[in-house]
Amino acid sequence: MTIKNSNIEHFKDTLQREGLRLTSQRIAILEDILASEEHRECDDILFSLRSNQISVSRATVYRTLEILEKGGFVRKMNIGDGRFRYENKLPKPHHDHMICLECGRIIEFVDQEIEARQVHLTKQHHFKLVRHIHQLFGICEDCQPAAANKGV
Amino acid sequence: MTIKNSNIEHFKDTLQREGLRLTSQRIAILEDILASEEHRECDDILFSLRSNQISVSRATVYRTLEILEKGGFVRKMNIGDGRFRYENKLPKPHHDHMICLECGRIIEFVDQEIEARQVHLTKQHHFKLVRHIHQLFGICEDCQPAAANKGV
DNA sequence: ATTTATATTGAGACTGAGTCTCAATAAAGC
DNA sequence: GCTTTATTGAGACTCAGTCTCAATATAAAT
Image 1: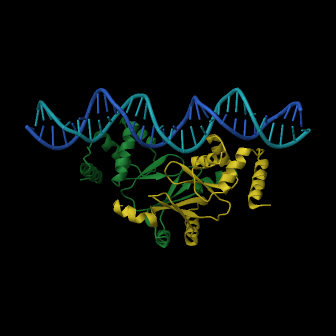
Image 2 (image 1 turned 90 degrees about the horizontal axis):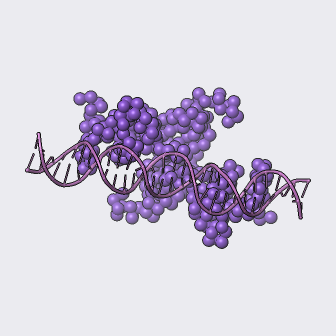
């Protein structure tokens, strides 16, 4: 059994547990996400499907993304520009993001010291930490010459 | 001269530098923000003004908030629920936020180690850090008993 | 103080991401 | 294959935020 098929099986189990059905649209959306390493918005996924002659409605993509998020297949991220991004979460350990303000490029990072400090700080405030967002906005290496010309 | 008046003077200077005018609406909005320590959304500010018999349109509040943000008077924050929050930035040094998922309470924090690690990490990636968002979501002390009952 | 040029305002139209509705369709179990 | 019921697509809808434009107010000039 391929890795891809084992993911579909896993998805099937997740659906069954919730009394949901395995449809061709859901499979197509999951496969498209599994095939990408990018942080994409809904329409990126929609157009990617369409470029493979798969027609799915926008509503179905949103609905499926919600199921996939709950099932731990994708991570939904808010980078503050009003549109959510979705990334294939399966092969990835926890990480945070640097986001280029010029080109939108996303660089992933993790830092154990920061993770530990977060736990420490929340304990100090008797706050039960559930999840966190840590985003570093700036200019990536490639965009720095261009940004300097624009006076950034 | 009171602290309040010196802020209005500072605002006046900021406006003049941009060729903008000092209007009663802009003063009222700034004063309302200066009088609050909270992280409020546009409508909170609008209703606060109205409760003081000051009628301003929503568009003007948004427009003024934009000017105040650029001028460094307020900080605009995205806590991921689709509505921006604005906080009086003047008396405050840099800080990040813990956000209670139950009651929306916001606790401010700073940690020099985290700040230093951020700089270190971005340097490693030759990324020019401009700003960051660091939000810790969870359950605040007060909400933990209630959340436990709901099975969170 | 009056005039003049132009920035600002308010009301409501508009935008765009995302959600909801509902009739038609398609899974899944029998 | 039949039945039950979840799912789909199309488009209406929502909601925060932005834009438009005629009426108004500010600031500078006279």
